Image 1 (tube, rainbow, N blue to C red):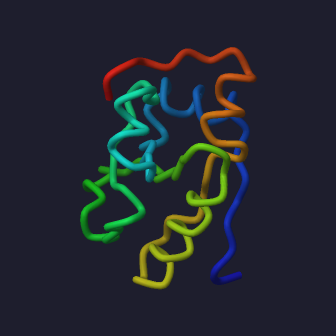
Image 2: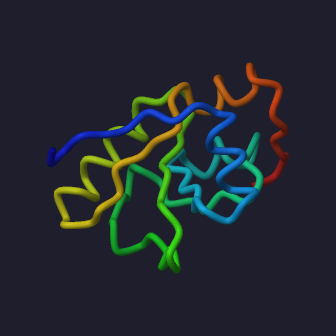
Length: 108
């Protein structure tokens, strides 16, 4: 079961963040986040990705997110390779998030 990534829908992630179950880690680059950001997301860009830079989730499950769902899988696998149990990502990324009618914010 190692090195597997679980797809979560935008609605599942939004609900989990609102309920305090998920820590959303946005692995997009700063310029992307400046243009449009997830509410309550923590930014850890994939270009300089270090799993140790992820804040302590304090009992929450970490969910990775990006623009379309590809970089978030890469980040999850990298975190798992570093021995962290972070095996969830937002399927569809920001594109899916917006398609689901969920709000985003401007300016990171």
